Image (cartoon, rainbow, N blue to C red; front, side, top):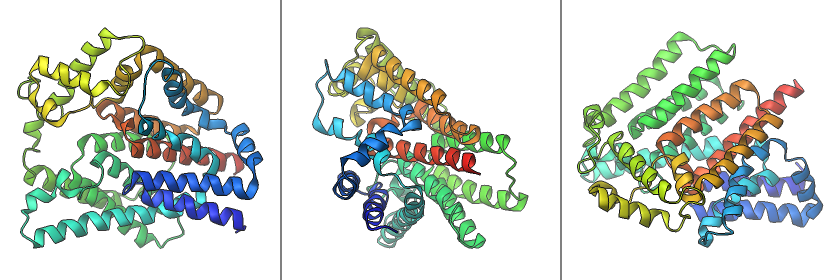
Length: 378
């Protein structure tokens, strides 16, 4: 490997490995990867990458939306910098490097979560308190960690590992995902998997599929049965703002609050700095105590964008995505997986409100684009 590529590869690997643990450190590593590229190859390398950005145009609508809306909305510096991976990854992404680092990072996350949980259990913490959100050990929410683990398992599948190692990796991943109990994430993953298998000739042996499903169900059953307040009966409740604390009723109440606020400023939105205070005021008017206690966001990324950036920003974003998707279409199986997974997940989570969510979206899209390039070269 050439020295310049090796240096960039080291920083890119560091970015991947730090993503679930340290937002600032990950962003710094990605920045150092770009700086090393400029130092060794010059600014012309960045210009060439920009000219050949191709499919990355589909994601630049987010940058355009934020950049244009900044003309009338004030934004904190951290609000701007969290979108950095959408640009930085374009310049330094190397598929082999990312695919080698992801399984290592995913394994580190799973060992940390399970190891820390066992350590706490040995020190008297009830087992029920170590499931669902109690499993996270101070890291990001389960939708972010779960997405990272899924990307790690997909990357491990394409590495030259022994088949039994890949099976163990998938089994461990599914067990941890089950113990997290993230219903919305699992549903989004199921939609993506069904789409992929319906569009390809890929087959899975029945006994392997049954084993994977059993592992996932076992972990999920533990999370639902033992973790306090997570039983499915608790989820399927009437959407009463005063009592809403479940997975569905809270989202319905939060969506109602968001729609009320969007109607007040439909074109330009409230701006990212005013969104949470506006939501808290609306929660007060609705007597939504759980939302006030947790300072909950909308848990719907599309409504969250509409609330922050207004109809103008949201239309701008979607127009850029559709245009980029049409001009540089990914392969149908992988592009559909991306849209189904992240599209459905964003209906139930404000996934892009954190730097890790933005980074994971960019990383997944880079993977999808690589599949298209690989199929074109085959």
